[in-house]
View 1 (cartoon, rainbow, N blue to C red):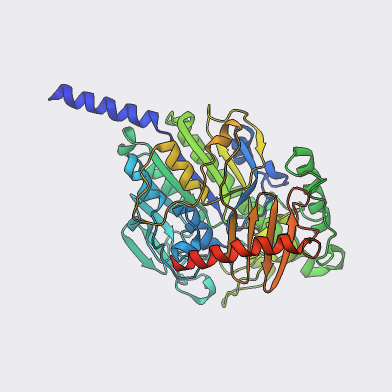
View 2: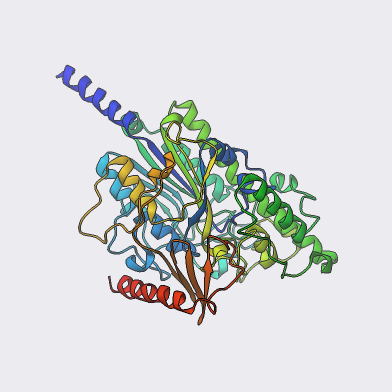
Length: 500
């Protein structure tokens, strides 16, 4: 019997070594050019290291909005098919990454934001800790604490999960609490579990940063003092030049469009100081996430698991140009960044963050749906530090991980809609058989090879993405037949998706 136990343990360990650990890091409302490895001036050395030794994608797509993006990522089907294209919904007719990866022996963890009405502990995750809602005060997701300002939170109850428990208005006692740290620390704690001696793990690390409110540690904010004094136009132009130099942007396909937002030179006095500070805090939030990713990397290395871990990084939509709508907040500059405030970056800085793409979060134009995407997997990327320009989508992640892990996808739910991107790790082309689709709010679109048709309201536009990556030249009047040829499958897809 003792021999059998030893043999079984050896087999389990061998199985764990054969299957990679998998970490998917998702950030919230981050622009296309906000990482150092995508052209930013923001300090992101840990994420940059993943890019330098991994693969950067230049055309990875989300859905333009937090909760449909997260649903696509978790289920491998379009949000319209699972009912997650509506607020306050559950993921129906679907299986999650947690449920699917458990079929092949994975220990599954989710730490961070979900943005749905389900507790991920009930959807295949051995542990779930974090914000079930869409946004919250970073310092205090719950009720006002004694001797402290009210935390805002848009006047709504925010739900927090801790495994099987769902807590309304979670109010931490620790006055040094920050959600980014809380999510990271919980993940680090799970990575020490005894079960991982014999099991591979999947970690979904889903940050709320840099989504508003703009809340960061004072020492991080101080690092960026004066960094944005040159203003919107200068920072945007500098980012664009770096992106071109790095090879992320082909200037022949994405010329920098004329600046159409308010001019930096028009700002005076306290308004000017507030605009500087908004971007300083935003940058500090991203550096905070990068430092957190660094802690995860250090943990993997100390455990000897780094070489056998697949890490992916993305944002759930483009930069956010909208206001917060918070009912209780201070707008005093001395409160910026602390619990009393609920600030956003605003439209002009969001335009900079999305350099050089068109529009922002909520739109199905590139500025709403295109994300930086990094894949790092030691020994599995044929050309580390390279770029891939294939159009891919969040729906592809489920298909990819099923192929890599040999997991069993259930037959009694909506079939996977994506294509495995694993061939791109070794420089092979994908054979996508269907166009990619989007629909959110008043917008939507379809991309079929290099042609993209996109609308907001009733206005449809047509773009040739092989020549015009930032959607500067609408070809709908020049090629009306092509536009109609794309609208037809879009409407058919939407009708079918909503009927499932």
